[in-house]
Amino acid sequence: MLKAAGLTLAGVLVAGAAAGGWAYWHLNGNIKSVDIDQALGDDRPPKVTVTPSPSASESPLPTEALNILVLGSDSRSGKENQALGGGDSTGARSDTAMVVHVDAGRTEATVVSIPRDTLVTRPSCPLKDGGSTAVAYNAMFNTAYSVGGPVCAVKTVESITNVRMDHYIEIDFSGFAKLVNALGGVTVTTDEDIDDSSSHLTLKAGTHHLNGKQALALARTRHGIGDGSDLGRIGLQQKLVRALLEQIASTNLLTSPTKLYSVADAITGSLTTDTGLDSLSELMSLGQSLKGLSADQVKTVMMPVVQAPSDHNRVVAEEPAASKLWKSLR
Image (tube, rainbow, N blue to C red; front, side, top):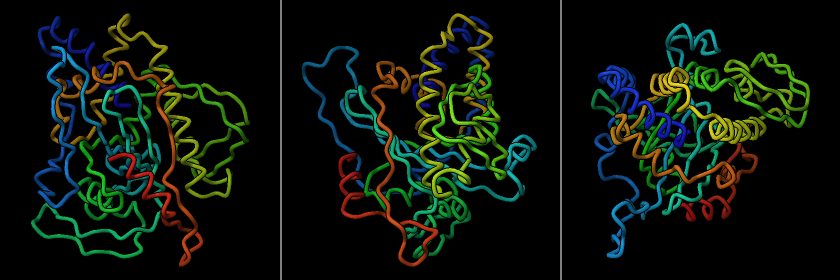
């Protein structure tokens, strides 16, 4: 997703300049942002400090690792999101949560999925009105977004991982579906039959080329696969991440300005980022730094969990394995 956004926008910047800047202005205005740094202040894990190499070239690869919290939200706002399963128009949850860790040379990445049903200690989070949420024990992980939005989601992830999130990216239901459609669909192989009345998806085991609505349904499917829990859904979501990377790599967007713009419009129109990524130039810079990263160099894993003793429908972090994983990302 990060590579897709950045490289696509790099091309759009060129097209936008040729069109007198209108495309740049429109796409730049699409992006919504939240000032995570100001909201959380210094009560966070430390940033990675880097000493530049004296022998660095004029355009060196970054020398620091990068951790980005990527959320897929089941936003209830807007007719498009509701039509795709958003439901009630009064709220949203983080249905998908992934910590994307990119190594210092931008040659390898690890995507760690956090099950939404994980029971955690949700820290006190600042609110827009100047107040704060109460600390909550044995709270489901995805309630952080519900009670405190992106700021609380980031703070909760940092609290349970002790890893600083350098950036935040959120994409909603309709945006994900539009992105897949703009790319011409995505090809995914499923290992078992899927018949989920909740996500409205029916597929036989095998290889399928999915449109945006079907891909979104696959990302939301949990019933009728595995044990019916969120853990089975995470496996499908990780398949989708790889399939999207492969689709982007096989599609030469620069040969079709119309398709290029459609993809960029889908990405920017559905994004909420931290203020460090809320412009085309910042997204382009990130994307260009990832241009050497292929799908084969992206490892997908899930935070180690076990069944929660207090609730067999929930999970908790499996220790010491979970702590060992997060330590490797610092």
